[in-house]
Structure formats: structure tokens, C-alpha cells
Image (cartoon, helix red, strand yellow):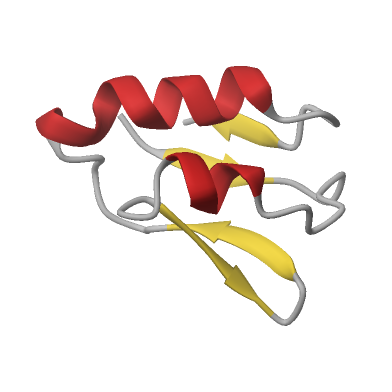
Amino acid sequence: MKYFVNENCIGCGLCEGTCPDVFHMEDGKAEAIEDEVPAECEEDAQTAMESCPVDAIEEQ
């Protein structure tokens, strides 16, 4: 599974705080790693996506 952060991102940092192995902040906006999400991070990455207040995280 891969994730993508779309243009809706408001830079709140919730995803990075929830799953820092997959999401990080770059120039005030979140970005996801380009690789497949490691199995041990899948649950936290899913939680980050579901918790995003502006639905900026998409599964790819």
C-alpha cells in the first residue's frame, strides 16, 4: 500500500505525529514516503489517513 497527500493538506502535522515513518512535513505541507508502507506501519498510516481533518491523504 502507498499513500499520497493531496492539495487539501493544511499542514497540521497530525499525520506525521501519528505515523512519522510514513509521513513528514516539507515546506509546511505533509508528504508521504514514495515506497510501499512497511507492514509494521500499515495500521498507524491508516489511522493517520482516517484522522486527517481535511481528507488530504489518499491510498494509491
